[in-house]
Length: 246
Ligand SMILES: [Zn+2]
Image 1 (cartoon, rainbow, N blue to C red):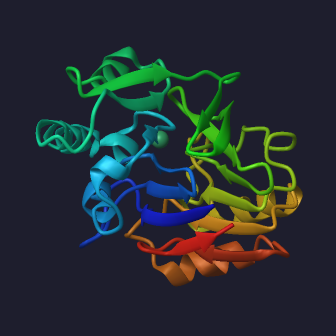
Image 2 (image 1 turned 45 degrees about the vertical axis):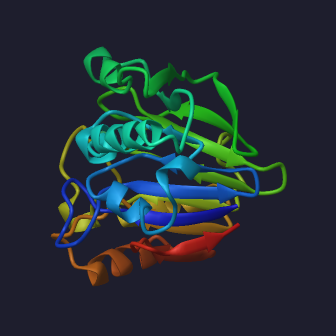
């Protein structure tokens, strides 16, 4: 499996940046996982829209979906110009319904809803789902080709139980929205870099990619905070265009 980071910032991109989106390529197909602001233009650096097998969305917060209407236009134009046939599949949660409905666009794209017990077989991989601790319906994804496993943590507060779902994964893509000094008091929807590193250690992830980073927090602060989590595996902060072969 080949993972390319198309966007990693949140909640809004910095100059020339993009909010979350990841291209997953196998010998059998190409998947887009989340489709944030700026992701479509990044995707076009790597593939043509007619090469894409499907989109899989973790949840409908704007930073994870706001290029979906643009992707729908891209699919429409590819259809009109005869470059692709049939309805393009989008996989995502059933709620909030008003946003879920927007993922279907005329005859060009159609939403297939997923639930926690859903198992997808797409592009040569199996994808299973875990509801995360987040204010709206949000699913982490476990993606395996039968040999290696990637867990994409989507958005999550500290209440998600990763122990069974993510244990021993080869790559843990975990959000680290805050550094410890910026963690809000009380109920929250996100993690710090330190907490992400601690979780990666707990589940014995072999590799950690820290993502969902604010352009307003210096990368050095994220690095220092992640180091404080004492994760013993290999870790890095996400960057646009970064490729990880698993
Ligand atoms: Zn979110």
